[in-house]
Length: 247
Image (cartoon, rainbow, N blue to C red; front, top):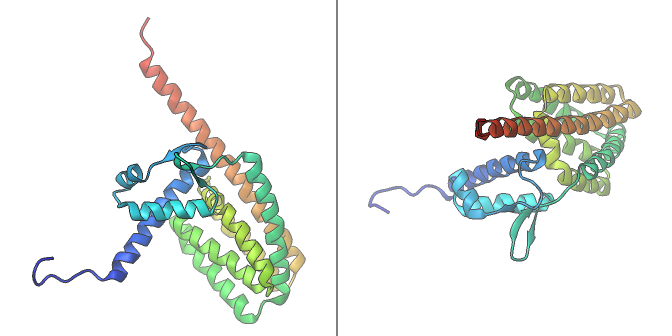
């Protein structure tokens, strides 16, 4: 360090590393969920560090988070590889999550305090600007907070733990489906329907709206993956045409 220079605060460095780790995790999440990174693909820390212009530390943290969510796994002599998750498995998880989320919001409707209801309304109101900007990253963060607030409002610690654990397994796919068409707009509209039912004190209707919301998310994910696969096939055909020898 040169004389008279001021070292950068450790807190700032740590925050910057966390943000970079999140950016790497989000990029890899989208690529895995869309199939760009196929099952069995090896993920090399150094190659990823070079790709994202980062050190290996934030890359390692991003891979650790992906492992927790079940998107990658550590294999002997192969390092980190993309986990094989079938479309059927993903849809089964969404179906289960739809029922879990419906149960949570039904209980939360009857048990939440006025302060918890106000907090949920504030979260929903704040999401309008994220949708206007088309900011998927910000909306994904809001979406986690919104559903977490509902879990806590059940005042059932065990149920909240189970809902959060299942949400963690689906987090990557719940994020990716927001990129399909106008899904981010429809997602907020569906949240509004849930909020209206909560405001009326109608737990059964809130549960019905939440179940539909989750199943719509599953449908959006299917659409996103299909569209992405079709786009890749078109690119492959174009590339093959360019390299086809003239008769």
